[in-house]
Length: 195
Image (cartoon, rainbow, N blue to C red; front, side, top):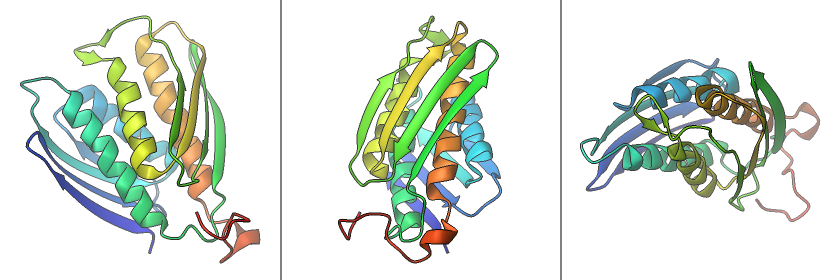
């Protein structure tokens, strides 16, 4: 049962996350931030992780706390659902092309969080959404999911395409990393004896 439910409450946000690593990519995400919901839907669909997010945040201030805290909660849910990580592939990588955008994502479910972010946006906003929040989301996900994550924009002219390609590339890399490895059933994918 590789499932998790996380509730995170602060003075700025109230977040509930439910996920199932062995899902089919179903999603039901409602954060109050339309573009962000669209990105979370992509994350679920292309990772094949069922994901439901309910978030209430201080959107009268801006979207920052809602986006960051959602990343924290999803990272915590991933950690919980993965358990001791026995039998998983652990690593994942993917090149994602979307029109003008080409993004590469590579990750390791190492329990050693580290983000390398080489993604520049040609615009500061996608609609009303601050493009800098894309990095904030992945920083929170990496930190609280214990993920070493590298994301690189190789090409791209359109900010929407670059952001969406980033979420989809990470999703496909995550799909590979969390999948059970039939050759490693019950075996920890590390020579250290712990992850």
